[in-house]
Image 1: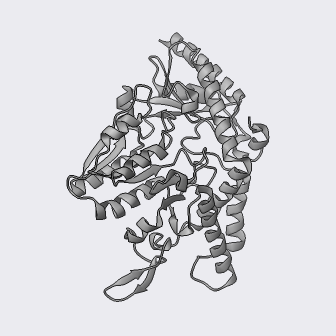
Image 2: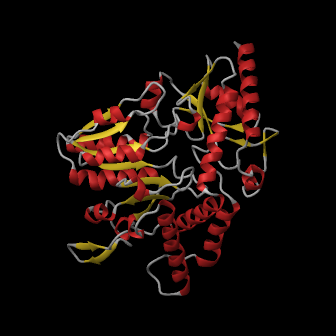
Length: 410
C-alpha cells in the first residue's frame, strides 16, 4: 500500500484535531484535501505572476499565460488527449456536462431522438439531459441496474437503439462505487451512431484515464476532487465535434473579431472559455496533476481497492449495518456507502464527527438512486491517498459506538 504517513505530511489540514480527536477525513467523494504543493503553486501565481492571460505583452502577462497554457498541456497528457485543442477549462463537471447538453445537444437532437443514462447518475448528469429532452422533444431513457448496482452490457444493448443520439454515463458511481465498463458501452453507443459522454468526476482522481483508449466523445471532471482547487474543471471533447459546436458563453477572451452586428470566435479551445478564465485554478490543477502522477495513478487505484476491500470486510461484521453496491471490492472504487438499521445517516455522521471522523450523509445528489435503493439517505465513507487501514479501524470503532449509543437512546 501507499506510504500514507509520508503522503499525509503534505496535507496541512489533516494535522489537526476535531472534537479532541485526530482528524480522519473520509469525505473525499465530496472533495479531496489539498497538498502543500498545490497551495504553494497558487500562492506563487498570486505573488509573482498575477496577470490576465492571452492579452498583455508585458512580463507578468507572459508568465501567467505560460503557466495557464502549461496547465492545459498537463491535463492533455493526464487524459491522453490528442491535442490541447480538446481540453477546455470549465468551473467543474457540472459546467462541462451542461456545455455538451446546451451546445452539442440543442444543435443535434430533435423530437423522437433518445438520450440514455442510468439510475446511478449524479444530479449533474441527469438534470441537463432532462432539460434538453424538454427543449427538443427527445426521449430520456434509463438503463436498468443489476441487483448489486452494476450495469450489464446486455441491458445496455437492449436500451441503446438507432434512435439514441447521446449516451451519458458515470465512470465511477459517487454512491455505489461501481466502476462501469465505459470502453464497452462507448463501442455499443458508436455502433448505433450515438456520442458517448462520460462523467469522470469520481474517476479522474483515482484511475489512469486514456480518452483515446476509451474512445469517448466527451469527458467531464473536476479539479477539487483530485487535490486541486475548487472552481476548476475540464471538458474534453473530440476536436471534430468541438469544432462544429457553438459556444454557450459570449464576451471577452473567446472572440476573434467583433463588429457592430456580428462577431466571430477564436479557435479551439478558447472559443469555449469566455471572460477572464480561471487562471489560478488551472495552475493549481496542473500542480495537483504533477503531485498525483508522482505517486502514480496505478498505485492510487490499487491502494483504494485494498482499502475498500478492508473496509467492507471490517464493516460487514457490524450487526444491522447494510452496505450498498458491488459485493466484489474489485468492481468498486474506494467508496463504501452504508446505513445502520433504524438510525438516520445524519445522526450516524454526527456521532462519528464527535470522534473526529468525517463522512458524508444525505442523498449525495443522487435522489433517483436513493429511490432505487429504497432509502431516503445513506452514509458514505470515501477514501483517498492519505487514508489508511487505521482510519478504517477508527471508522469501525466509531460505528460500533454509534450503534451502542442509539441502542441505549431508543
